Image (cartoon, one colour):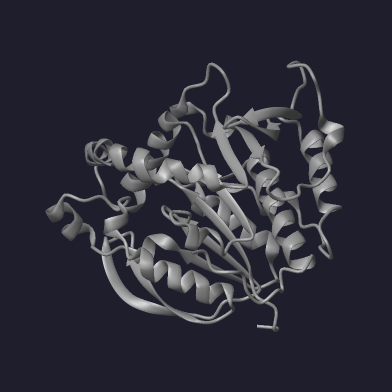
Length: 317
């Protein structure tokens, strides 16, 4: 560490909402700056077999050491090392803890990272991923059957079992986010066939400053590719950036250049090096995903450049 505290980003959302995919692109964009990655799902109190025996889901606060998570988020905020628990998603087992020394940037992703006021105070930028439920179910089935050894019917049963906890504990965290990311299929395209055609809607709340993209503002619905709109979310005014999956390379490149121009001290990297995702074992590129990752990188670098080096925040009561 250099004496300044890390810049901390929280990426929270339900299981298979796209948190890891978004995080991987951010780490590429921030390279060669050091980034520490923390998954809050590592703080599970019970392993997979114990959860099944107890009839509790990983989404429930009582299934997680939230007090330890709060303490370790605070240590990371102060630039202090932690001995982080580790949960192996492939086997469902709790394994040897990991020693982590925070670097200039800390990206925290998981299910319950915004659950308490104590946790929320330590982030510079808070992001919530909110794909429509039919799309998230498709993503979870594909991931858990290919990477975690489940059968499709097992995944469907688990989704149904988790729904109550998702509604009670995961989705309410949306209200505490600075940016809400909604990937969704175009009209008339089913979630099963939408992988390469997803649009994204970014709800930009005025809780943090966003780059000037007013030149994208349009009043009508006939704008193609990229639109900046004024709207309301939870009854409050917000900016909404919409990027179509069918955006042309020229339109995407124009917005990328605009955002790069706002990044302090950064050298643009080729567009094909970020915005990547896995589709049935094949790596593909998405311009809406790339632009989302680039916008979040802007916020991290802005926070770092504008004095995030203050050494502490006042602890919530």
